Length: 318
Image (cartoon, one colour):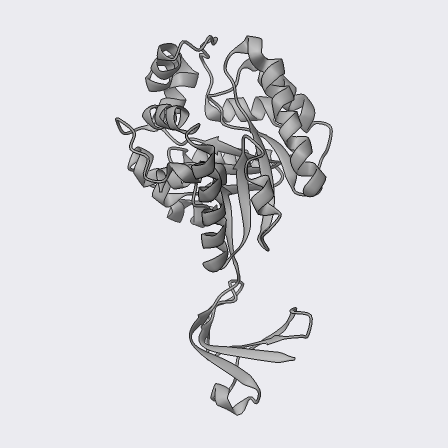
């Protein structure tokens, strides 16, 4: 049995404990959290730290494979310009990318991160995840607006999904990227896949910008211009919203991480909370400020009883 004390223990489930003590058995399992009635020194065999003891951190949204894009400088503010910059630069040197992934995982581990929900478009992070003690949920992300390429996009995603699932059988998921980056045929394939199990989890970028709302409602705006200038064949969506898209294609029993929610109203999120059996709002503050110069209304989220988690997003937007 080991005991560790600190100026404060942050158990999360209750207020901080001054001079608290954690008891740990020989297998590393926490058996008790003690709030001493007197000074901590009266409890024997306690190793004391000047500082605080907290549970391990969970990064609820990350893109480790984009770690080599740290310091990315889009030409303009906004999501459309950011996507363009990532698209142009993400295929830089594989050696640099691999080293950046390893460095990012090491940094996360050394800073007390014990679990990461990581977005994956390729298998590039897999070798490094097998060498660390961090727990991973791997979200294999699908996107593609060209309706003629839906089969290819889905099948390529399934290949990556299978590779990760062979090593992480219970924590690998297939997920849509966002409400504005997927064609109707690809959405149908994703939706059909999600109906095959009631245990699925998705992590989807949601309400990250007003451009998302304009693109879905009117088929205009910065995202429309971005796709058109890139010569991507797509069918413009009209009369839709982020909320209508996910309720149309994601089954209500799927556990869902809504990532960003910067421009989402409390009303639409309350509707989605009732619609989905298990919904968590994930915020990435530094990314939100970098890309759109705005934070989501976290105080409103908390006062309305939403589950809230925090992520770093990629180093490209940090």
